[in-house]
Amino acid sequence: MAMAALRREGRRFATPLLSSPIRSSIISHSHEEVANGVRSISTQVVRNRMKSVKNIQKITKAMKMVAASKLRAIQTRTENSRGLWQPFTALLGDAPSVDVKKSVIVTISSDKGLCGGINSTSVKISRVLHKLSSGPEKETKYVILGEKAKAQLLRDSKQDISLSITELQKNPLNYTQNVEFDALKIVFNKFHSVVQFMPTVSTVLSPEIMERESEAGGKLGELDSYEIEGAETKGEVLQNLAEFQFSCILFNGVLENACSEQGARMSAMDSSSRNAGDMLDRLTLTYNRTRQASITTELIEIISGASALEG
Amino acid sequence: MFRRATTLLRQPLMGATSRRFSTDLPAAPVEDSTFVEAWKKVSPNVEAPKTPLAYMKPRPATPTSLPSKLTVNFVLPYASELSAKEVDMVIVPATTGQMGVLPGHVATIAELKPGVLSVHEGNDVTKYFISSGFAFIHANSVADIIAVEAVPVDRIDANLVQKGLQEFTQKLNSATTDLEKAEAQIGVDVHSALNSALTG
Image (cartoon, rainbow over all chains, first blue to last red; front, side, top):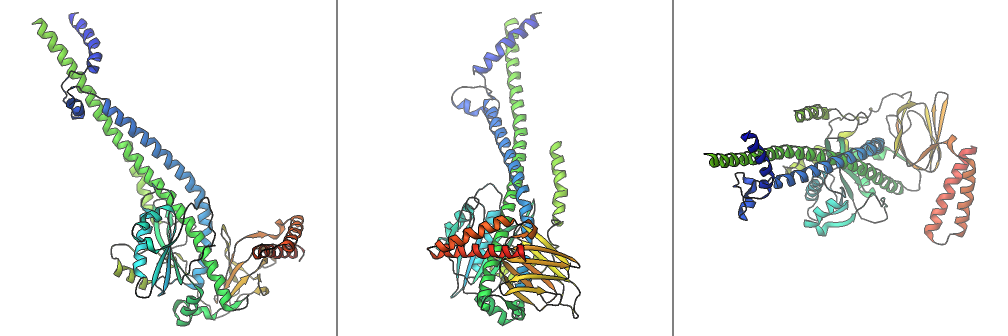
């Protein structure tokens, strides 16, 4: 009966004792409390961390769902637009290593962040392309689509950026701005699957270079064997062809990059919420240990106090 | 315990990366070797990007004798209307007039104006009104037709066409700047082509 009374007393004392800090801390988490001259085993710190990690987990899960639904919508459009660049490659081949005086690198990137490493990959590839195509008498310029590549390329290649376009979602592309080029290299991430994106570079040549290459032979050598129908001169038709090719490839490139962006965001947010879940598990264990340690300490002190009174 | 389940579920996904999209082409591993080598010299740590050649399905070679059918690929920015369809003849609206394409046609690059594209397969004729684009006819009897917009002819409303024609002729008469004139002229061209598509 005395033990029951003691136990009741213990419970009554336990809660106010926890809040009035006169305990020695044995867990490292309460080091901050010790510094102030107040010693207790407080679970408050751990509880705050747990709350914030749980919020982060919810947010990243929601972002993943949003990215997944956007991906589904844009994936069908991308698949349908894949037929667009094939005829041009069938006709003109592909000449990424063509030697030209003026090359323009069009880097397609996203406006928003939190999408994994795809923008850094595009920028890395653009930089190497710049190095590849620079030399005596050659100049290389950038045209940037999207905020993220602009931010990265502004840092070291500010003078080489001739044009930058952002907010593609709101303002659809219009080709009114003039950029002189001999060869255009369009860098984007091709959507392969939800977890894999292949960096790709598509080359578009200007009509003059097309003529030059077709005379030189090689892949474009067969261009001469094609009869030209329509318009007055071959030059005009080639001009229209180059422009049409550019817009088709850019259209497909922008769609593929958007698809890759959503897919990369989905996997980034997924791994982030899984990380948060792991952190939450670890924090819960720490929280329970702290809580149990403090209860044990209370009990020990009460019981030793009581036995000191008795004996 | 359930954490393991998610990692286990991810494994097949990773293994399935070797399987392509069902609509994507099987990758014939064709690479531009000069490009890859030049790349490696400049930057050996960064992997070279892929080029469209890597994603192209190989095209049939030029046959020695006249093939019997024409393979047509008709693509739009938002769909592939016809892909690798074997037909007898197509008539494309080139800027120089209606051009008929039969198997064994000489290789041609044709610029298209707004008009009717008709695909003849045996006794069926499918007509599309296209808004302009390009047509490539290759020596191996493969025809690629790329248009920006296409609509089957039976879905065109005659009244709207008349109204549009009148509206644009009015705009053409009252246009002041070159830009307005050009836009109005384009509208008139397209609508008169639509008109003749409906009647012809």
